[in-house]
Length: 254
Image (cartoon, rainbow, N blue to C red):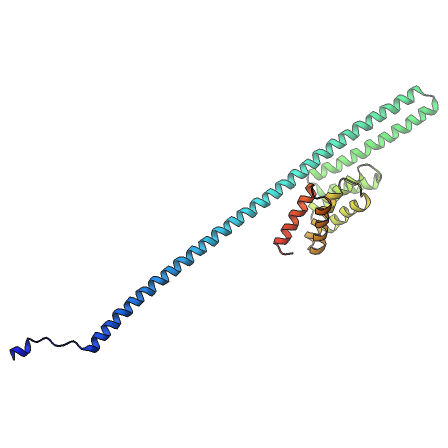
């Protein structure tokens, strides 16, 4: 009895197999858990990379937008300065002509004196149209758009043959445009193109026609007009701005 008690019992083979299976299953579960964590980590890093890329794209778009706005502000400031310089030179020339006419009237006979009086009337008319134009232009610069529209319309009705008529017609379109009256603005700019084909304002008027068509969601006409500006006036501010708007339309898939 004592000898039999000291012999250890043999382990059940089935239990051994079960224990082995439990060990292997635990090991597989640990591997799977580690792999899942690795996949999650990789996905998280990929999402972070995508987010960084999106931030970079947003920064680039913001910088491009601000650069475009600054270029447009600089363009209009430059146009304003050039306009004032031209008007100043024109006013000076008109004054000189008026003085010459007065001198001729003083040294000639009675018939020439009458002609001198007519020259004075002409100079007075030129001064009147410059004054009326400047009044309308000042209203536009001071953001009084409705009053500027009325003033430019009145100018064009009173001085249809003025040398400033094409400029007045263009700025009438600008007043409508900033007032978001896009159909009226487009018609005003189109009149610059049709009635004043030799005007220096023609490139800018064509550009703004394209802008109006864009605002009115007339995508195909807008692309055609802006493409015309880029082809005819490639190395001008209007040409550069037209290309920028075409690029924007391509990005927007219009």
